Image (cartoon, rainbow, N blue to C red):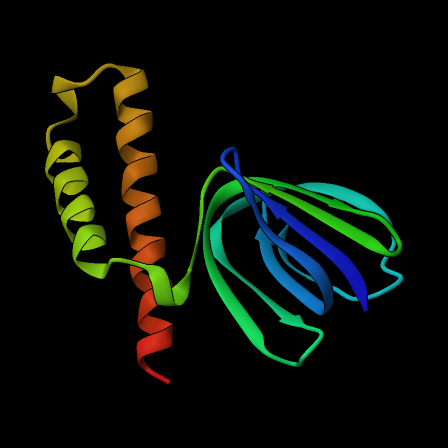
Length: 137
């Protein structure tokens, strides 16, 4: 077991002991166990899972952030996060459609608007995928 802290700009999302953490970084999928070699990486918009000390696997949709790994402690700073059971799929579908519509005519946006719209699209798709994985169980 190792201590995991997940923090968003608004709050500490999770703090406790876990057996394993799985997350996608710019360098690929990473599985963290106790006594992992220390490193830092950037987290992509992805499904992040971890097994808590009771053995329950928890899933979250995260929209990017930073991963800091020490031997007995891991800290994850995320831009945003939602547990799979808390995702509003209807809202995510609406966000995805709005972003797709805006991205279909890129000439109406400057570079910053384009990046924000692409991030909105990626976040919506990730939220739908994570919620869907819960539904399929």
